Image (cartoon, rainbow, N blue to C red; front, side, top):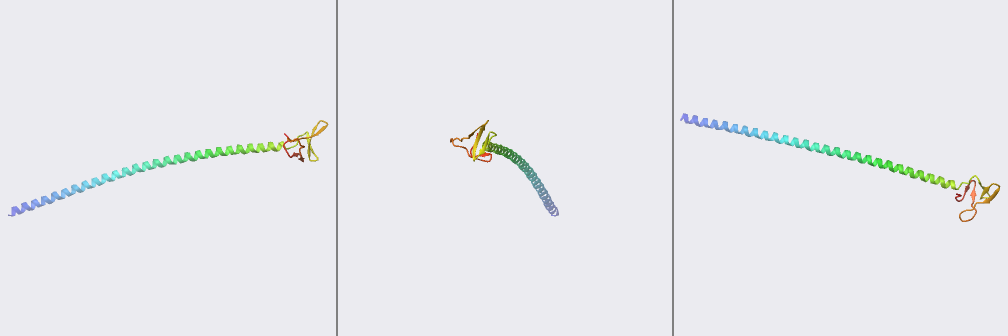
Length: 143
């Protein structure tokens, strides 16, 4: 009977040993699986981070290019505006000069007088009427 008890106890001990060993294997397998999942998650996070960084850099470059283009267009527009303003100023000066009496003209009695050698005549406008003046400036273009 003692032998039977010893065999039962030995069987029970072996059973406990095998159960503990099996539990250790399961724990080790679970730990390995968890580590593998953690590595995969880190790899995915690094990949996502790299993609986001690349996207951000591309967008920064696109924005810099856009700012550069807008700056160039603004400079071109300002240069064109300056050229237009200069043309308008030159035209205004030309128009203003067309109202000034020439070296062979003078203002006498409020009328422009043309002098040619020793003869004098009234300057006539487009309508055929005498051109009025004040100082060295006529009331309508002379040229």
